[in-house]
Length: 281
Image 1 (cartoon, one colour):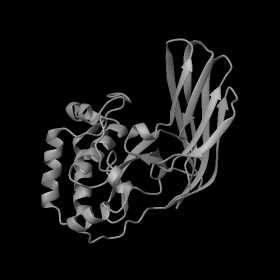
Image 2: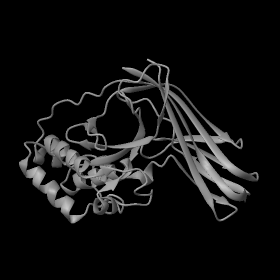
Image 3: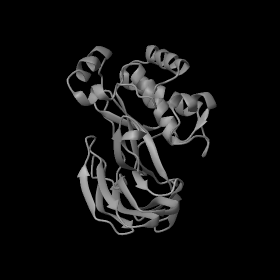
Image 4: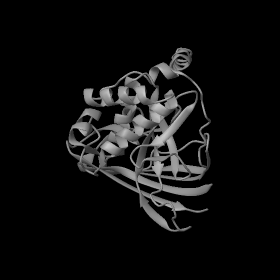
């Protein structure tokens, strides 16, 4: 088990004075299997009243409006979370049983639908089908497909943008965690395995000293259903462990962006992000 303190600062600098902005933030983790939130808070500057709710996918959302002129919007989310390694039970579920199971719940069916961000290129879909034929079970096939994506795509910061699709990253052979996860999700769905996009944080240092802040970043990984939900980090080719802190999940990035909003004011703005993670135990 590890105890992680996460400080996530983000927002916009406007090319002038914005007269109003309307925003939603998904930056605070919730307690779930393998993690317990000990404390969390979101500070908004300029000061704004917040309306909290849990969205359709189970993610904690903070909605707020800034109705005074401002040239900069800053959000600072601070969380203290205890995280444990996730154990995935062994499932002997075959393909027919998986298909029957998927039909019993809307949540599984929704995670089979392709989206513009996750639609896999033909080459990847063919590789996924080949991995499926060679695997002994849906669980084994899912892991093989996800690892294949992580091994094929190089992690290159700045090589894509938030609007890039899985096909864009596959063509370039490079992307960031968002792109690699989109590719894995799309490949799994293409062979009938429900998969979802997970957003959160990853402490980048496995043996980080206690009490030392480390520069981190928002992270993304994939979960698939093969009897129960199992997570894997294709960017780093590792299982989900006590360095991963989950914020939310959805069909793709569009369901769980850390910050989304609209504003009235100048035509230009610049997004800034800084994440700091400290291991406290």
